[in-house]
Image (tube, rainbow, N blue to C red; front, side, top):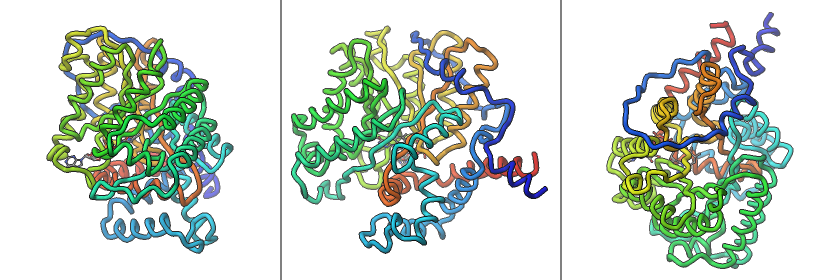
Length: 459
Ligand SMILES: Cc1cc2nc3c(=O)[nH]c(=O)nc-3n(C[C@H](O)[C@H](O)[C@H](O)COP(=O)(O)OP(=O)(O)OC[C@H]3O[C@@H](n4cnc5c(N)ncnc54)[C@H](O)[C@@H]3O)c2cc1C
């Protein structure tokens, strides 16, 4: 009996209410755009036909539960993060998680398998198939290198020549493209191209020719696979140049019915609304298609605080307001002068309330023929599975209710690849950014425990 229970909980739930991902993915590709007048949307928790977490393997639920205990307990979090940082950044061969036979199995099973794609093409392909089998649309894969400015907005000087740094970065990204599937994303950080490029961004220089050549190769690879690139937003001392270089790429690659490049707008900036308006205006004026990824922003702890909204509530209002107005096609002056303007929108984030409200609003507007832009969604792999799975389940339910529905959420999972230590370095930065998510994780943990109980005792 015990054996049977163990066997049944160690496979993905086989609830009969799941639709076949293939049906949904066809619908997830449809798109229509019509301008919209305003109307209200409810924010009630979504009523779903079955537990969204049913699609996750039990190993992942157990890991998420364990990690949520670590995240939500200050007494564990501080020392845990310190040990994590020590291992991630250690130069000692003994502490290296890829070499040490004691550290390797723990970090591999508990952390790497939860958050990372794998070390090579086969492992990454398995992870990607598993994510797709769970009903997600695909993955966003990132080559995890990045440079962060210190608190004086300085780097620590170029160690290699700009040519070598760009070449290494280009090759890392081309390798990444090789490992993603059709329709996936390449998540790209410009500072990954090295300290010299980071300095050029900080000094507001025009795009260096070698960097543009590298991007041309990367974009060709992406176009050949029918994939897209999002360019991450970073610290404000760099962001003006990141935007300007990204627009240069959009001018080249978001034309003639093709959309390859998305910029990122950080809603925690007081200027975020103006940034959205400016990008849409520029795209309309110059005749390219605008792709926007909207995030709240990750650099509050090490960026110029006065540029960022004063409170979390203000940031929430900023993010939610931009989403609401873009979905409805109102309140940005460009919509008055260019009512037929087309653009694309990816909502990246883990805030359940925001994401749930956006998906519900998009559904209501689509049903009324008033949705201006079809939003897509992305979360980091291993984080906020409750809202990611909820979106996928919502989509399956929508298709069941109305097979001709025009809006089915397309949801992507973002992850990095490489050695255990490289991935731990990437995760350390994400953990620091997501430290404020403890309350939300408590909420998520309740659902995880309910799902585990359902698998163990059937209710
Ligand atoms: C797929 C993906 C891609 C991402 N790409 C980027 C990127 O390119 N650039 C980037 O900067 N970030 C990026 N992020 C991180 C993102 O900006 C957030 O840091 C992270 O998602 C947590 O915010 P949230 O919206 O999920 O929800 P929440 O946990 O509800 O919001 C937390 C966020 O609120 C804001 N905040 C917290 N406290 C305050 C305060 N006192 N005053 C004002 N604002 C406050 C901060 O932005 C903080 O990160 C990405 C996240 C995801 C999931």
